[in-house]
Image (cartoon, rainbow, N blue to C red):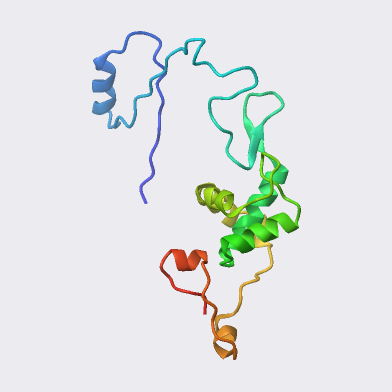
Length: 171
């Protein structure tokens, strides 16, 4: 896997094409150009509003300069990830979250649509969960594949994560 070094130039004067030529000659590739403008008063966010949503599981720090982990939301993310890796359906995940008393940011009980909308966030934070000591210490609750094969009960067909992504029902 290739490793990349990144550099960000802060432009404080009119942009010169000489900078691009120098960086390219040194082996750098231009990846992005970012633009910004001052918002007119009519478009500016109101008092206490943000123009970007704070990702679930994080909150604004007391000094308002950075984002930090929100312990309550972190618990919800860990539980969701735990249930997803065990191939629970949306309805089962919702039931577990609500049984444990967890609520969405707006104070409402969890629902299937809200859990579905959390999938991109779970994908984003998943690698950090799987590499953390906290995750490694979690008990392995997965069914042994042989136990299900030897069972007298037929495999149940449900709308699970595995079923949605084409790997068929759990067996």
